[in-house]
Image (cartoon, rainbow over all chains, first blue to last red; front, top):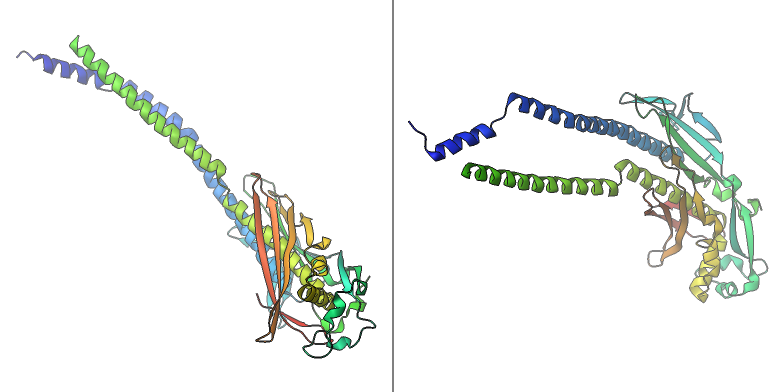
Length: 212
Length: 176
């Protein structure tokens, strides 16, 4: 049976559009070739995620330990270095272990924490008001009695001074060290630092005891 | 001849479709690259937030210590401002004091060593005479420029309740 012109064309078209084994193989090769960098990218992303997870753990560990350290009474943690390769646990008053510095294993990664406490040094600058020789000093800030505020406007009653706060302030620094990846030998560190003032026993402290 | 013309038309449309797809993919890739370059990693954001907070908190602590050590001077400076409109002494005690304007690298890490600027923004007495209550409010700001050259800042507010007594230092309790 003789095929119509349309059938002949369609048959030809189908022949032209069909894929040979060679074409499929070449196509697969090209696809595989393009997938190599994509898979590498994916693996890299997974590695970065793991590294970020460790970094965030280190940051949280550092922050929580620092916050806890500054909550301890001023005199309870003396100037010095704690933890690191050694171990140090600070306990609450009833003896419960509360704050640990040293090496800890968190989710299969080792984190080394160190607390470094130093004396903070510096000076305060201010204008000081000279109450000496003025009438009824005791009533200066009370609701009754002589109004002292009139003296505050007199420049002669004010003088500038600079006072050291060396014995009243400490700097607490917590450092966390960890290995960011099994593939690297490098050690990362993260340090947070905060000042803590001595507000203990303030009823016994007056201005004259401050070093000038 | 007719068969060839039919084939040619199809090839042309295939090229057009391929170009459109390629253009869309390229646009998506460009958008992805742009978004990635503009987005700051979460780790960096957490690091910045904590570092800035530590520096600002250090300053509020230092300001509170100064208040404790020189309570009467601060009250006198404050009263001068309230009664005579002269805030020079009060400002010198707080916002203008050089010890409250710091550039610090005390908090740092393997991946971020950029120094942080911190200062006391305000230090005010909040008094409510109706309830015989008084509080000291200290606001500290910390700011730094990140690796993308964008400013990042954080403000910390400390409010401390006070009891003012004649001829004695106040009892201070951290309220917030």
